[in-house]
Image (cartoon, rainbow over all chains, first blue to last red; front, side):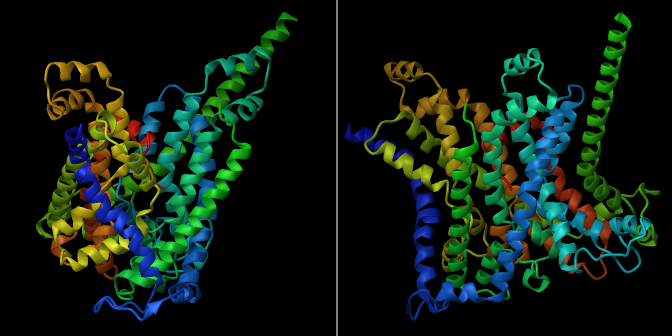
Length: 297
Length: 289
């Protein structure tokens, strides 16, 4: 028996080693870092322990700007992408011919490199010296003025970022919702039709409640994902996000860790733990709301 | 009376047709929105530098399609280097991950040992840990080990994936227990059973996991950016970012778009081949955004 136990652990050993070194140890360490005041990467020494790192981060303008940007992005993109994905999925499941083709096309952004496709959005939205770019040409055609979506006014930048974010996250949500819609038992619809229920009534009384667990799953993962926005932002505005005024919380963490303003793992850790606390709070709130409203069959 | 009924029925059918048409229109418009950036990047990449810059109004088709941008981009060397790095990184990370998760999943699914449930619960709990929380220490660890700008530094922290262990374990458990017992009676060792019986049966799931991991590796940006500042070790994401930032002023957009096409193409091809598998796998638990 002992021999057998040993063998099981042997099978687990590689996984335990990797997880221990790169997940469990870092998880403990990040809390230690966040309480070590004045930690110096080079000499690996610190003055003492306390809450100074948190206080510093919470008072820094760049961090507050990043929190603001992240919250705005979350508030715009999560409802928009979930709602729109629902619309697309309902439309998709009401057709038969070409359905596979549409599904394939809609999923394409999921497998593409965020940074790479971001450059295409960049040239579509960025006005150049002798060429306004496609989007601005359309704006001009409708009689508007050229807007610099990449280096211009805050809301123009936020618009492109939200648009790109929605474009990037939709494939996953459409996929989940179409398979949720397909799994609703056909008999409910038949029964409702026999009773003469209208289309909208069927949708709100049967379809929506039946897929509500999946919608909430998407809302929760959507919140988590949007709070961690970073790559999409870099794709559009470059790595100097503080200068562009478009930094996000995750961007702030990485900037603190590495790069021109880097070398402060303690501040980065404090910011990461604040982010984790925010995401955890929002997720708990979401779960509480969902427990009240979601019908689990 | 009969007439009225016919009229109503016809009106109903017409409404239904209009509704269908509107649905198709809506779906087609969004499909165009999704495809347009791809169209635009291919289009811009086959225009010559002079043709592109001579346009004050962008043309929706290329008058003299050319591959010179692709030839230039590949000749220049940097992109081929990023490409090769990404390939090495992707293959090594995926292989190493499979070597780690297959035995682990097998142990959880088939072997009995004290504390198994506790350990498995701990593994599951780790799924909830966001990457941002552990990446700071990993950065310090790799830096202290002197593994910045090495393949090892890129690969090692990217290997772990609790979720795939979970996915594979569920799949292993679905294999009937009788097979295991029969193999035991025949005196087959656990290890041999795993390789000769379990893996062939679970091949679909293994393939799905491999594809999902390849996509993840190919597109990874954050960790490679933190751990490499020597261009010789850049992956494609960082390479694209660098091309974009260094070219902002004089911007050779057709050249840049050719690079973007080259970087995006492998995954699009993989996607078109394994479309069903990928979509199934992602709906079972891939997350992004």
